[in-house]
Length: 123
Image 1 (tube, rainbow, N blue to C red):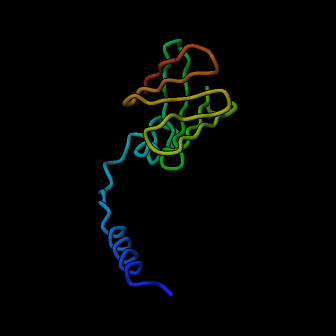
Image 2 (image 1 turned 120 degrees about the horizontal axis):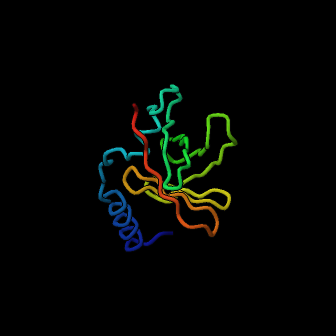
């Protein structure tokens, strides 16, 4: 049998749970936007070309509303898959990470130096 004070506490706790602050979703991140468009003329949704400081060109495919990145050095190259748990966090793959700073991408393999890359614009 539940006593009256206990029932009162349960009712108050239930009321407080329902009064939590509701946050409106913010504007879409750049990664979310790029998951739905194409920036390289291939027509592949979410694919955008990047050029890195060392001259490497990357095709970056934004998938799963921007929570997954697939990196390739060419359209037929072996893909490198990275994932992020939520928007704005670092993407992680097998001995490789990628982080966005605005539209710039910083890729780091193992203990190598970070490799900054910038998104190429359509010509």
